[in-house]
Length: 492
Image (cartoon, rainbow, N blue to C red; front, side, top):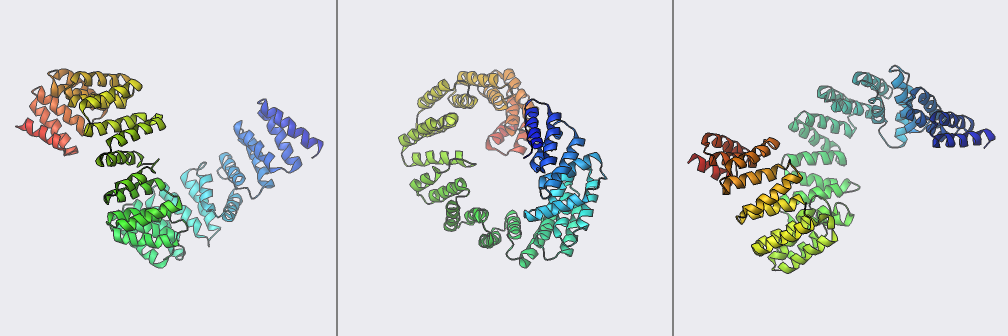
């Protein structure tokens, strides 16, 4: 630590804090040169980039590489900066260094190179540079792999197939070559060819987890579940972390009606502490299918997050209700509302469903009133109360609630449709109904439900041929009994 080093270090800090980036850059570069400090060269590089001074950044980044020749970020950045100034810049030595450095980190250096040069060069220029780099490592299959991946990203599947075939022919003992070639076949929509290739590959490389996983998944896609199950069993034995295999084994076992085997696989996920929400959900389903409602509830209660969270909560309520524990189910939902206030509307709606099945209309409307008093502008609650009111022939409540929803969200197509359909079905305000349904259809022109409503309001207006056209469209999109009934009535 000399006087000059300390002065430049402190002056650079003060300049940076005051926004004098040019002075800060100069001082940081001085520190890097005087002290041989790579960190200061990096800071100088980033200051130059912040000022959009690529010329200064190249100078600092070149020094950074000199001081830290094994720093992957420094190498990648200096390549980017050099190519930004001159696409013909001599960067091949830097690219080779990236490959070597990545190898020490157990990474594919060729992919790291692609990431660097693709940002600055046109596709053909980048591929030409990559081919030169790959040529410098003729015995390394990862170069050909990176080229094939790059061609796939560009959707040049003919080139990707050519490169992948060359890779397999040149390096027949490298499993990833078969993997990338199978992906090219899949990208081209040739599933049989991909499957045949993977079947051959797993026969040669019986312990390769990537090939086993790819082959098993393509068998799942082909609905050959027993074969897929057998492959995932092999994968479970060779994979360090067998969570993915256990997950798929559990799902396939359920499809094959092997509930005990499925239970074992999902229990394995619980033991590994991986995908526990999914595992608990399916363990609940297995217990429920056996009539073990208490055990099922305990599993469902462990599903706190993820894609099955809502379904698990709904099943808890249904199981409690089916066991005659209506009061307990209501209490549980109320506790959940308190525990998760941001999800209160969802739990209110679940409570409503419970009361619809096991309570009275007065109790349902009373709960809706309580919920909406607490959350007066919640569209989900207002919409649900409006629809329920329609089932009770209370068009006045439906209209009031759905108009509030539409005021809150003028593009709420479902509210517009529900209001229009009910007015068409239960009142003589058919022209008004048509206006709401037309607005809904403009927002969701492919909705079978809205096309059905349009057909029904046309019928009520006496425009039978137009009604038939809309209802046929709706039925083609969704062969639903109610749509069929509407179409039948209009044809009659």
